[in-house]
Length: 147
Image (cartoon, rainbow, N blue to C red; front, side, top):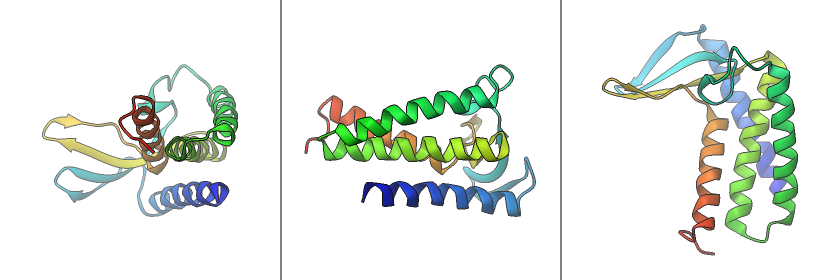
């Protein structure tokens, strides 16, 4: 079951990025709501474009694969259902972005939110999976969520 969910999440991320690339030019924006835009941005760095001119894609891919391997073994060994979901989400997001980087040499980001003059860097579904997964693990670690 874990691998079915993993596959569905990775495929959803891949399809969402393909749709964006098919319909929007790079740096084009479409307003969905006053605070939400859909765009097409190429992220050559890690989270939020950090190190985009410093690290090569292959180093980022290698580090991502090492972390993904660790997550995979952690997923197998975990006895906590909530922790397993968190790991599964993080692993799905990591692999989604790794595959994107292998195919394109960058990651496609397309969700762009802001509040007044405060802008959050663009992100994608894989980033959402990673964020929710980290929150689940933190909530189980600090006993905010109990099984």
